[in-house]
Image (cartoon, helix red, strand yellow):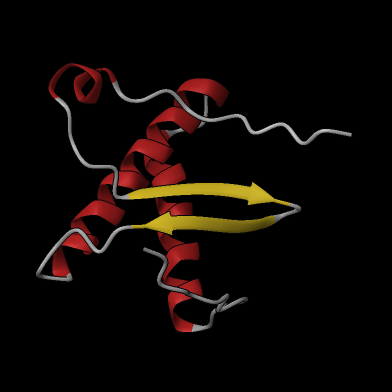
Length: 97
């Protein structure tokens, strides 16, 4: 059996203007696997990136399910804080050139 990888499309603005991919995430057998680029000199910028991702995730969830965007964002925030405080899985990180 051949595994199928279902990649997302590159965002239209990146198609048009270019850019730098900073994170790619894939769920494999229930676990998250990512490729990530440091991208910023100030790690605080990742806080903004993660907040933007949370807002986009809440918005798409709301659009596709009819759930309230604000309640969805509250649930995302709650789990994010819980995972930061007590990780369910630390995973492993390796630098790959």
